[in-house]
Image 1 (cartoon, rainbow, N blue to C red):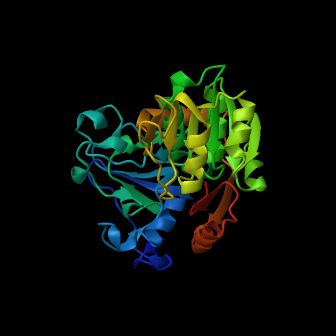
Image 2 (cartoon, one colour):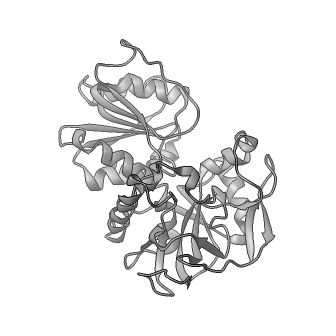
Length: 345
């Protein structure tokens, strides 16, 4: 079968022929119907390359959905042909956090299998081997694998970020989303679907702000962005700021517009820094990063998508054009989320 693999660090991924996987005990092979193209992959292909402890080659694609193709012995609860999303955070499966579905924060990651598309073979291929049936979530009716795939990361990560700040997102609250790209445009929808807060979208691109469907206000990024957020909140500032870029500039904006006792959540991995001392931020501001989300949260998010409350903006590419998808992402010409579609229903 064909697969898009990283074969050497600091080089473009390439389509190669590899053996089709088969399910061992407890495992499941998924016929891939959608694999999201994530900006973090560009970091793997670029500056992070040789810093990662992952063996080469491996197949890209850590946002995946498709149809159950083969069930290994002991894999239960699924049927061949069933449409499923793949929960991508593969933990050890036995620690306390894994047992409640928080495999993204597994206590013993060294005992976990390499993640699909994250050191292990991912979904940029015709078939994907999933190490356990527990990593598969049935899709609700009306939600295709191509639509569901980006929700497994680009949707799940902001969903988790919003959920952890839910007590600060009431009817009189303001939430600011910085960076309305693959994750940020879904964050806007999630905030509107699950909270009563006023939503402000901030981005440097006007066309990106057009993706912020549902935002109450849009603000162009820059020196005046924080001032405009303050004006929109009558000088109070935002109760929750979600930074989906994470650069020095965006963190400076986040710092300038968060209010006392607010949450400042860093999701983007652009490598910016935030000064922190007694006077650096308003009093009692909580600063945190988030990594993915839990399996139960993915179930909830897919249910919202099945009801039409969350809908990722996607640009699809067939598998033979997968390298083009990465070039488009690098050039900043992708609208919403790029999704590679190796197979159709």
